[in-house]
Length: 462
Ligand code: 4AD
Ligand code: MG
Image (cartoon, rainbow, N blue to C red; front, side, top):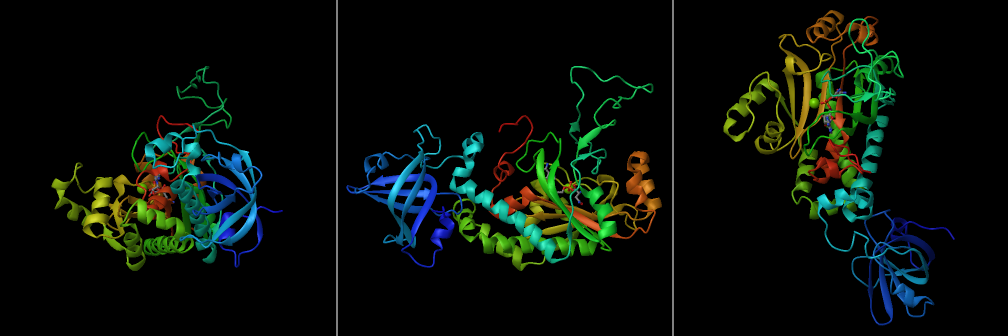
């Protein structure tokens, strides 16, 4: 007999069938002649109620089944007499696959997020985290669906790289050199990587963008979606050393088109999750953030505000006493500023654009004022920056002078520069932090709680 998933059993058109279910016991309660087991197999939030009566040959053993044990149940799907659920199972045979001792840490009570982080390998056995991981899966799918529907090509950009896309120098080095044998400098006194695996210095990528641009400049519309690494030593609730980023890149597209696409994406992903994950989302509406539903509905209903960076600075300067960090034209916005704009001032997503060139990477297109670049960040309530993007500098002389200004070695970027030599075109793209989108959708406010095994400074368990 084939095992069926609880999700499918609960959607059965009619009762009466003999079924086989397997899963983990959430709880057991007993009456004189019956035991009631709440069984979950991860396929959905709902448990399947299994009813064992005293006629079962191992009834005594069944009455010892503990929370966390794995079991196998043959039975008959029947209409449930109790409220809440349509079906239950009248057990014909219950086999214990592996009993869990009472040291199983997830007994039926509420645990703190901090505690659960310390047993992240067991988090998928809880209601909240299994819901998070199911939504993560659906959100990935929604991303592919969104771009596939629009004729984008899904490309794979390298994880190991020789160039620093964002120019912030926050990269992890990849090396096979023996750490016990110090590297010898070359004749000019520079570190000599010729003995290393790639014969040059290699890093984990901070963004797939530069490679994505090369493919957009041949395929038109592309996106890359994969793990990204940042050696920022910041222990915040919205940064990790390893996170997932979605990066679309579009040829023949300017900053306005880029903003339009980003807004359409955020709305579409939100709508998709509300529709497809309604059972899991109800848990977050009820137990994580009671204002979440309104926030998401507000996003669907609203046009995002489009606000030049200069105007953002003016708005923030009027509230300077509210902030820990100063606001000044030419300084990057801090998370408190971003959140103020989206959460308190506009109360909806805000796209800040035309940032000063001094605080942005070399590849962003210089505006006619020569002071700002065609950059855009999307800020959302509760999180702050969720998307960062720009129109790219397609003019060769301007790109070269920007690289020089920023002290980048043209030799390291010869292939990138090449793309501006042979049929260069205006193009744009952005990066959506996948975990930040997960935070936005679930109301969870610590990024460590929306990824199975978070990687942060001084933390590499699991
Ligand atoms: O703004 P960022 O640095 O932009 C880029 O990397 C561009 N190359 C993207 C592009 O245009 N193709 O990062 C993009 C997004 C941020 O808005 C944020 O949501 C997320 O990635 N992000 C992080 N998420 C978690 N942990 C970190 N350390 C993150 N750093 C950035
Ligand atoms: Mg950014």
